Amino acid sequence: MRFFLIGLLVTVLGACVEQTPVKSDKLVLPEQGQIGLYYFRTSVRCETCNAIEKIIQDELAGKYEGDLKSGRLVFRQFNLDEADCAKFAGQFDVVFKSLVVLKDSQQVNLTEEAFLYVLPKPEKFKAILEQTIDQF
Image 1 (cartoon, rainbow, N blue to C red):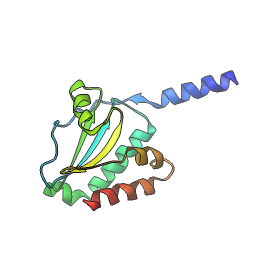
Image 2: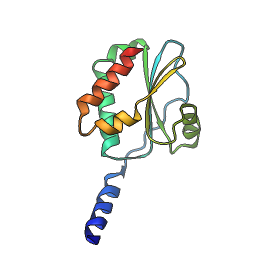
Image 3: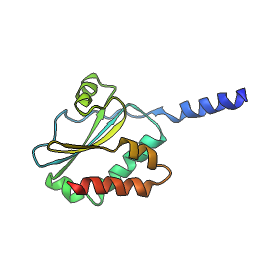
C-alpha cells in the first residue's frame, strides 16, 4: 500500500511541469462593451490546465475569430506567479488558476466547470464556454 501511495504521489507531482514562460498580458480591464476572457494561470501547468488552454485557443481560432479581430472579444492570460498579476487577480476574487468571462460589471467564473469537465467531457466544457460568451 505504501508503494502505491508513493507511486501515486510521484505521478501526480510529475504531471505538473514548468513550461516556457509566457509573459502576462497588460493588466487592464476590457473596454466598455467588450467581452473579456481572462485566464489566470501559473508557470507550472498540469494536463488539465493544458487542456483548458487548448480548448480556449481552438475556440478563439474558430468560432470567435471574427469577434477577436473586431475587438468585441479580448483574451488575456495572466501568470499568477508574477506579483503584479496576482494583485490584479484580486479584483476578480481569484487566488489560483481560474477562467473568468466578463463584460462591463458582469462577471462569470468558469473555473469549476473548466476543471470538472475539460478532461472527461471536453465537449461539455466547450459548450459551457460558448454559452457563457454568447450570453453577453
